[in-house]
Length: 164
Length: 288
Image (cartoon, rainbow over all chains, first blue to last red; front, side, top):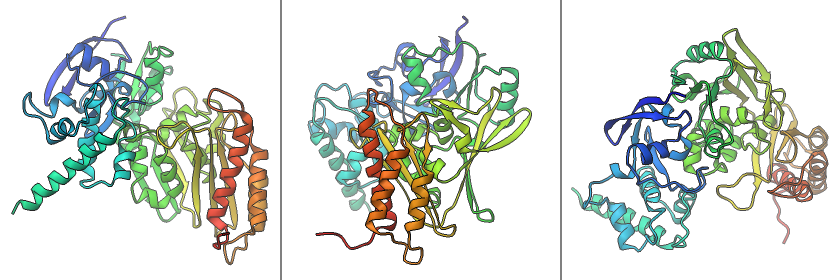
């Protein structure tokens, strides 16, 4: 069977994909063909959220996106959020709050938290819990993750509050 | 080039006429699970529907009192007003689907096309007497959603056909959805119920999910509650609500599988139905 050739728009750049099999997930293409291993593969059925990326500005599980169908749509992975050595506020506060233990779920959670705080600037704890229900963490028990989200929200409010 | 990403319904129907066995891909939340698991390996043509703008929009038609939902509208979109205001039970059901990630991708048309007995949108569509519109190169046809859903993952969709729209009446009266699963988030339904009270028509409609090969309507329960409701005060006696739950249980046809037992499902769907009826037409005074 001849492979699929197509171009994906990932983190602001056109990336050519060669010899993909029909039905191959965006997750596998990102990791195995484009070398972007930030999104993690675990359940491959949309339950764990560790493969979360933005497609067309929407948070989705990249394991449930057919790569060949994502042509022409902007894709943002965790690698596209920041440059090495200059973490985003979410990434920094995850570290500071102790929200990272083994780290496997962290890229997906960081994507989900950015998406949440872009839509809801000051979420309640209930909102945080409901909105992050699709990102499973087996280490932290979520307490410090929720702390980190709250701290980002407070820091952003204080920053905008002090601005003229 | 076996993966097509058309942008219009006409392009889709043309592709389907050319490749009747083409696999239609909507949000991917069902199909990609099958592919990742190795249970499905598309060999021929995949037609992805994401880029078809017409499928991704909804419209309110006040003249006919309907909400027309494009098959590619996502659960996230159904959770927002105005659709959520016009079809509140559909918004409630949408909120119970997966996680934000799943609700951003999964579509109402995909829910129908998969036709799982546990599809969260489906009891709502059945209770609202929704109509499904299908398009093919030969033209369009419409059919009631209860005729569209034939069995476990079986529908009346013919090869060459595409679900384009789902039309639901905007009903004057209470409507709600209830679901039981092992927890609140990220759960596939063990039993669901949707109740719609049509104040103008003085009827009620009840549809059950996950308790039969496909969604079940409950004519006996419906007529029993409709007769028991005082339509002036919009209330019914507690006995009538219990009876409604019993008739709902009796109408269910559950099986035992890896998610639950038939006995539990039969019981749970009665509890859910009675609970919905209490919310809709229960007396306000609460027992101590």
